[in-house]
Image (cartoon, rainbow, N blue to C red):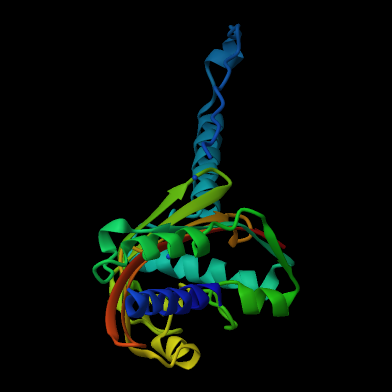
Length: 273
């Protein structure tokens, strides 16, 4: 995983240096009216029976409109339910998922390195934190399962409403736009909390690949998801993840060093069925 490689390289470079010195409007139509009114006595004085038929017809049309037009979800629970159902259709039904780009932003206000190592840290960040600008296309269920969020899992989201701080669903005509903002969480794991809907870095992964890391915790905060859902099929066609996090690392390599690194990862996807 590229994120794990970045973390390991950061820890190794910083430790070595110390030794030697992560939305479409609808359309409306204006009704038209007849230019001329009919003036015959029959038209101006409809019978009681005719009037009754017209009223019944109007009531039937109103009822039909009410039953065929779904209500836009408004509660957090209903919005999360719609998101989970529509997002999970990606791994069940999608023929291709395109990662349009991935941005990696360093949060300077959450960057703490040992004294005298700022220049080394800046060089490392400039080298390894470059954005992915070329689209990557994943086709077939296996490739989508392994590479799309949540990586390696058969689902896209098992999000629980209790982990959501804000949820909105906007009717865009043929689509819904769902926006979710998640509560903060320390060291989430895949399948639980934020890890049930986002790609998270786990301490076990880092320890396996970098045994010189003595302590490792993550703090995820203000994570956001924006998804476009086709109303006719209830399928997600476009989705963007933004996951800010802070890494707190203690490494033991030619001495013990405490590092704090803040990242924001932004991933943008299109989905075809």
